[in-house]
Image (spheres, helix red, strand yellow):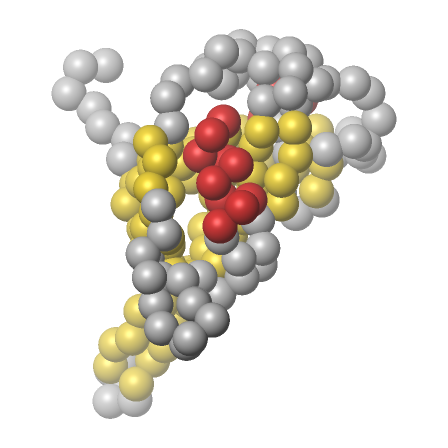
Length: 161
């Protein structure tokens, strides 16, 4: 459809260290979540704080950057697109996961031994060839997020990564 756009830009803090995995063909993939916060005044005049969690998946060299340089609590800039995928859990129940497929990740802060901050390097992910289908069993599955490799989910044989 001409004229449509799927673009997500987030700045938030990692909720846990990135989880690194590799497809059977050796392509790196990192999964993690970030929190974004919002504060506003409710109708009753009380301050309301709201935290939204976002699931992030990163492929290729960008995933390696995440695994090597990012950790829980780091402030990061994420740019990518929103994707919802369907997958079947180990009990045969169909589930859906919505995540940000990041094509740009940049660390915005980095604790240095002296206590200061420095900007981490930035890498731009290039389109990758499609990974090969994974093996059977529960390998690569996280009950909360679905399969670690989207191509392992049912009906994802033609995933564009």
